Length: 148
Image 1 (cartoon, rainbow, N blue to C red):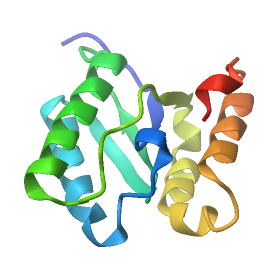
Image 2 (cartoon, rainbow, N blue to C red; image 1 turned 180 degrees about the horizontal axis):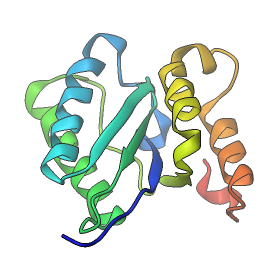
Image 3 (cartoon, helix red, strand yellow; image 1 turned 180 degrees about the vertical axis):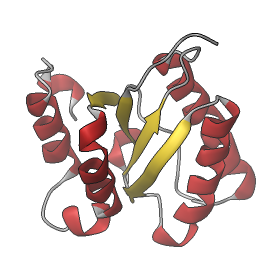
């Protein structure tokens, strides 16, 4: 293949209505499953982490993979897996939409470190405030009504 890219994405999405349903105990199994989805889509996972109401994925997308299709695949298949395995009994669904932000290769280590420390980070900051910061940092315009 003669297509070369180096685009690192941070993908962020939450549980429906940001309900705190992703208990710490079963998150590693969910993360392993999502890793498999990424691998099946030829994407390279750098880091995956989250807390009880949202996830962060740091990945490189294969040039043949569309971001929206990948996220749809992750959400649909992981939702089915969660319900089939009974991983998170109170989990209903993923919230519609997502945040996706690109980073330079030189930022990769700091980004991975940031995602690794999500539990500590969210003792001080809510998901909504974190998302608003990411939107501002990346110059993304947004409508407050979608940040419920």
